[in-house]
Length: 328
Image (cartoon, rainbow, N blue to C red; front, side):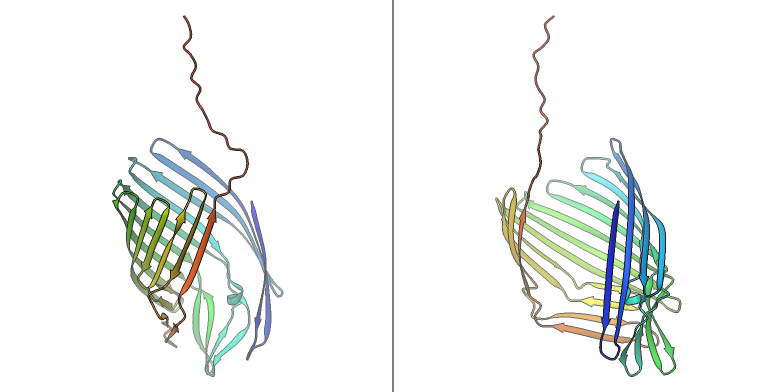
């Protein structure tokens, strides 16, 4: 069982002055059943959900079931095939639900929508893998479908354009990736290359947008006795939701450190090779298509990570006792 209670308060200042609060409670009761045979494992679970949120004098209660399914098939010790499926219940945010109107410019405003309601998200994935001492490969295909999701909507009202949120028709996210792992020198070098494709489909009441993204993830892990180092990079990340496309710049991460049995200490840097980080935004609205970009010059970050493995309680080991043979 789990319960989460939250109290959110948004304050708007500038051309609009408003204080908007939201009270939200989420209760979950979860149960699952697991089984396993020699080569097949399965799990079926269900979550009973009670959602309650209140804004001003408006209150909403929702009851729902969230099922989960996982099936794993291992024909050999070096290969596997796994299927996952889950149905989730999503609630609107306070920023989208409030009835505050914000002025963007002389001909454009942003307005909340108190009539928003919750929606379902169905997620499915199919994975397969094969592993050998010097190499391995994992294939993952995922599909996510949102029923009546909350996405942006733009319409004309008098002499202004109003940007608001509505429960639209649907949103689809289809992705496929292949992770190739190479170990040319035992456990000392581990190189992973992951080409990836993701396709987005946004269906609104008055629009339909599609977008396809291709990217490549590269990860290199080095280890020698207790010393470790890693390098990670991926091509610029892109994402579409509703009528908005977001594109970020390429990112790099370098880490190095020392790993003992029960603790590890690593330090590294984020984006050490770039002087500027750029983010692009594009809105595909037929009434008001807009493009914008953000340039950040101070994009380098340095980090230190210290991890401990703490064990509490009694620990026991099973031991088989050898008995002498019985005398006849």
